[in-house]
Image (cartoon, one colour):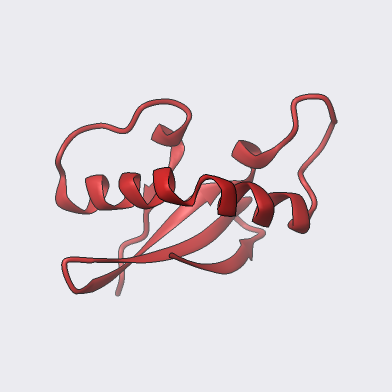
Length: 85
């Protein structure tokens, strides 16, 4: 999985993962990485640490969404795929 940075318009991090030989890009809401004890959005460092710590689950959800094989469980059900043009 590769992280491509934060998309300010959607308040999500863009991540990509190869699924069945195709690169699939997803939006990962930054609120998933927010520490519930603090107010506001997480720092980039906090978000990248959270993403790295949950990479396996995020990748599994991207594969699941790309293949259409079920629904992810919360909170990962907030991840959406980007349609490539």
